[in-house]
Length: 398
Ligand code: AMP
Image 1: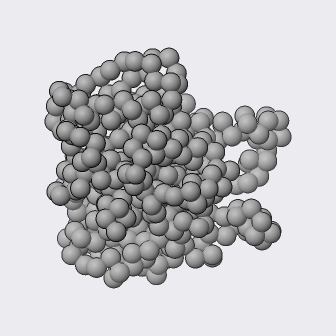
Image 2 (image 1 turned 120 degrees about the vertical axis):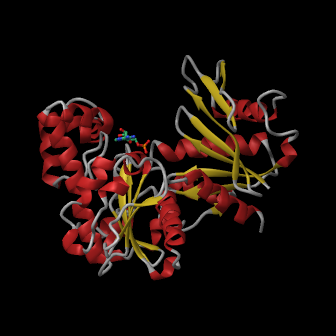
């Protein structure tokens, strides 16, 4: 079966086409600047050079029409007919409390996604546009919704409740949801395979460290705590998001700036690595500047490493121990320096890195712990698209 995976943002659309007989990627691409001047599609077939087409792309329906044309194109295409497409999997950011797993889309699922829009106002409407556009382009082909929040729905109330009056949870479902669930699910299950043990026997801490980041405690295959929250700013320091801050700081900013929208921009777009360093939200730029002696860049990198270290230690406490720590996403997969600084000082917990295995390791599955380390330390590149394709195939095959 061939499965198309779509990740729709408000002005962009990423896609990958999988052949599920061997889980290979036949083609992938990106539509950018939907509804904005200068829109274009960049399409890659396996290892070919990308095909780029610049054209007006007024909306998601048109974007999807272009994607399907590219997939069928006699030169850049990989399909002879759209009949080969078995199903479409959509990344959907928020599924609320109701959706604890991936589902086939019907009208009640669409209503659930709409109902969760107040929790993900930027993402859910864009995800819905993709679903609607696909339904009209290919009626009868099943669409599956794979939620970023679903994996974390196993968190117990003691992990997801905030210490504010309970009525806000009862009435408005104000609680921790956390995100990147598809990534945490993928890397924790892959880690279990690499460890040669059933996921149900392992306590794993997964560190998804990218531009957006989250840490998850995966206890015997289930998420029991995770560092993002009702929104996407808490937890560790991110590219432009602030990570954990005292609620009083937000109240202070509100008083000082006098405008909630302005404060929202500060904590989402002007904080994190960028906010502290004043240089960049990209860790490579920040660490380059730190190497040249920039003290604020050094501080930004230090705050990031320290915040991850604290989450690892506290999640080990949550699970009464830890068998493996897994690093993934842009920073986790590529930055040997950051991995080393994070685990430095955790030797008391039985965590010992082997510098010769860690140094220079980029984007590859590997164990980087010392042979005598009680806790395994692993790098596992994430693959959210494959996880979405697998869920979609399972649902569509039923
Ligand atoms: P992602 O959001 O997963 O694409 O991750 C983006 C982040 O990964 C950015 O902060 C990049 O600077 C960071 N990153 C990618 N490669 C490296 C590297 N070799 N060293 C340090 N950071 C890296």
